[in-house]
Image (cartoon, rainbow, N blue to C red):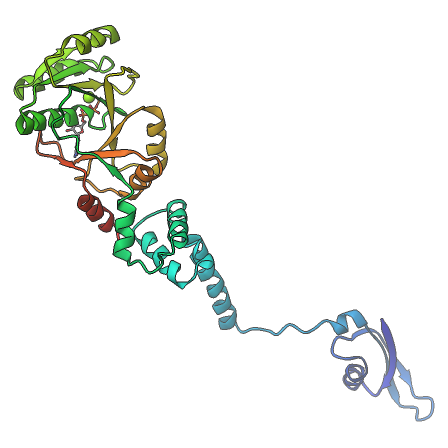
Length: 329
Ligand SMILES: Nc1nc2c(ncn2[C@@H]2O[C@H](COP(=O)(O)OP(=O)(O)OP(=O)(O)O)[C@@H](O)[C@H]2O)c(=O)[nH]1
Ligand SMILES: [Mg+2]
């Protein structure tokens, strides 16, 4: 700290002298009125000080309100961008375009990241957006379960409650009966919901389908064992059923309008060979299930888009899936 004492005619002249000697940041410690011993005039004695450390701190440029607002807006914009497009800053121009395209279509970073990595590794960076989407769809396993099989087939319809298991089973049964002249048996094994088997029996009667009821796992075993004359047996389970049989292949019915977490939980809960989706006549996003079908190597078979039996069921196919993905873009 430097301290300076000066004598001036008045306070304002003294302040000017202090600033000249010590600089703008000087602070006045004391002032005292004294008489000049030679001239007898009234003068003022000022003691001031400056902290050298403060003096050496570089001055901060003051910014106008608009400048500050612009800086803040820039920061917020880049923060929003890094939240919405977290991978963008790590990608070169070519990959950024593809990233933004897949993002626009509704895919998640956890899916886009590895897809772009694979693209980069395969040195296929010139691929068009359309081909990129086709290559993603080609990774989905699709199987046509409407085709007639040579051997007897037994399918169980499993899944959460109220997702459309029974109605999908009925659509599936009628399609096989009409298209393939299959000899179909429907087995009601929903022993959790009161009256569910009776309701299914009534539907089967209306649709001219053969029906049997299995009130227990033993009864179901017996029916599977004995009903060899049927070339297609379809079993309607309840959401709690965990029945297994080596002759049985399960079709897991899931509502398309679901979050990724819900779909993941249900995939872990039910063992199944195939996936069927319901509710495609309502608002939905197909991307979460597409990502899971690919990542979990599941087999997608059909989807339903309404309650009409048997009309509102479609086979899963590449062009249908593409249309669904693009309708979100
Ligand atoms: N809009 C629409 N409704 C559907 C579709 N699939 C099924 N439903 C309706 O969803 C409701 C439930 O269907 P169910 O077949 O009884 O469902 P579930 O899974 O067997 O139900 P629980 O046996 O009670 O577990 C019914 O009213 C069906 O008509 C679909 O694709 N779109
Ligand atoms: Mg049911």
